Length: 401
Image (tube, rainbow, N blue to C red; front, side):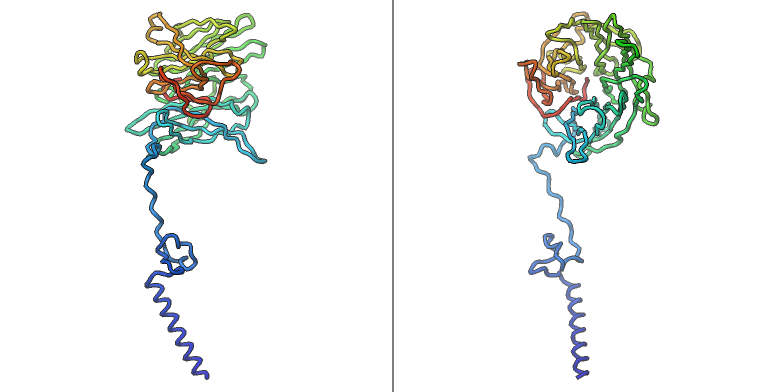
């Protein structure tokens, strides 16, 4: 009996060894399917059998966004989170106005201040066939305290790839009574121009100045808002309303344009970035009905009446839900003293693409009601046609403004 049991055990062992040899030399069967078939890779019988991953699918030939390569404007959308840990934040996108393709760049938290308390500027260059972009923004970080960040990226094989940032480059503590507004990047992305307001402890006193900083100087050590000498400044008093607004680089990076207000008069001025003697290009008299100059943008208007430098001017009431009208000026004519004010379209936050199109918050071709202007619709105006390109806030094109 014991010999029979021993014999049966030997036979069972031999069969088991033969079974393992068979498994090792031929595909394992999962049901009646082979483990080399990827869809059976998770079957228990195939757990130890390596399966090559399926190849990446070929790009959709009808998807034009696989060739995403040259975004010409940036914008943001409300991206606040939900639930008990809800947080106010915005998502920043870069997009191509011609194709309608867009790519999310980053989320920016806004723990202080309202969701729209974000000022964004965008510029780009192409070096050795590599597209490089930079966005800079300001947001509130505490009571009367603001900071400025930058974020750099490139476009690699149709995708946005961050190359530096987000990085804080400027700040104030709040004790200095300083506020920074109206940021604009130079065409080469290296310099930032902005408006700084210093509030006096006395009521109705303030000093407005236009300042410029080289971003490279702020990377290793934070820059202060007032560390650079003003390019130009004015002092506001209870007797006279004097202020500055909307400094922007010209498309050649040699001049800065801005608006100076004195009571109801708005002066469009140009200044070399290294001197303090601005030239007045145009004078606009504001009134209660149409308001005054709110924003300007400088760019090259390719395909407009002539391919030259233009200023886009948004004129509207400062207290009426963002409604405004956009006009244009040919800077060449203004330099000669013959400025012509041309109506273009209705909207706010104008800025120029590098190929001469106006990106803006669109209110349509004309304003139908001063109490009902859209503020989340981005439009494109090429001098002839107006079209809506996306939903978003405060667009900033890479060509000026």
